[in-house]
Amino acid sequence: MKMFVKPGDIYLYMDIVDFRKSINGLIVVVEQNMNLNAFRYALFVFCNKKGDKLKIFYWGVPRTKA
Image (cartoon, rainbow, N blue to C red; front, side, top):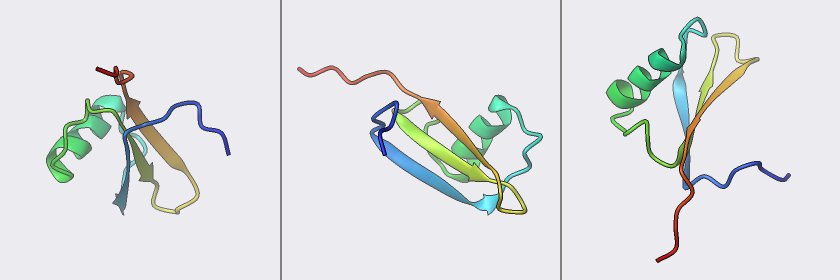
């Protein structure tokens, strides 16, 4: 499978997420529940109650090589 991005990390949030949450709500979940910086170069994956849908939050700026 070819990904459209190459994130630094991929995080799967294991608890159920209310899919009525907007992007701001997902940022709150990442920062308060996962204790991570939501603006890091990573993919955050969330699942609904039924387990049949995913929401993926991605914030990334390509890393520059020094």
